[in-house]
Length: 448
Image (cartoon, rainbow, N blue to C red; front, side, top):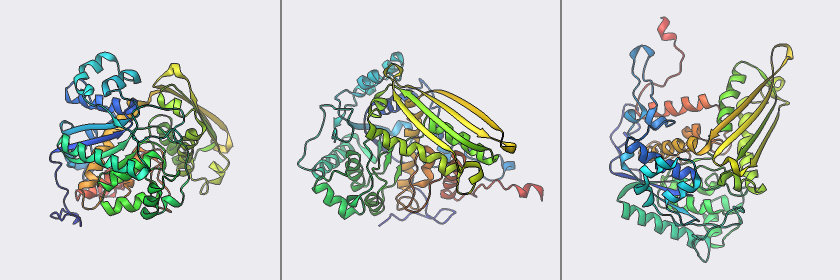
């Protein structure tokens, strides 16, 4: 049964403080994970600032504009402090986090050397991995088991071991691993009972990321999916999440090109500017690019990227403006580029009387630099949700859609992709949890 806490102003129960250590468990200790952990340690040591993190640098307006109340989010809601974070993870390669970060090539060596003592101590646990699901990768640091249920039990042992050895009071798991091959929801995904039978039989429709998610949720640990994999976006995981009061969210970090789309497309729709076509292509050379060079993994990513424009622009409501738009996405593996991805967008728009115009975007971004603060915010907000009497039993945390390319929603409910609506939803959720008035921006009260 949920723990009962004293009532807050909204009558939903007060969120207890974030006492003690928060353990962060990361499947996939590559570029994103090492950039995140190295960054947290750099901020803790005063070497740098947590730029890009809403929880650390963002503010939230409370009450009327004339009141002048805009505390930082980390001071408004009881989030875990950076000094209370401890880390572990799994990977198919045996490199500790310092060595993995050097190989990833995201952060400069002088910066990494300042946090080397900390990163070198974080060594990967043996991973649950099957090359059939990520065809372009292979490594030696892999668990063995007679079936997928046994592998899940081994992960549960890892979770218990980390909780004990780290002294963590609470845990969160966040997927920073590779994009798996495309999987459609099947019979084994429909219910928890069917899924557990599938684990016993090593059903092919159960990918390694699902084994991690199952193990986490069975231990009552919240899970965030940073890849476009199906993972927790299935009935079985929805059921388990609610049963264990372990929040879930996903999927696919909204970093480079899709971030730009969710900024520009709402602007076009707001001004009723038409769209004939949007062509997007990417070149990147990191491990993510190598994985996406496989057609199956690319299909998973493509599905995530393509859904954005249709949901934002709503062609069924505006057929004259968006009913015939052509949307194409390409990803090209180009090793010399490393983690410094380049995204090219050609956007064919039209305005008054149908006159055509074009926009060209060339975004030279650093994928892991954009992803790392997302990881930080998600683990802190998921821990908040786990402690919230109102949120922890919901399962899907749709209020965290702000961070994802393909946000999860309950079955039958379309996702909201507009970045600005997502941000309003996130901040209004925080206001609601603390019993503050929701901000609608109506503003008529200023003119009475």
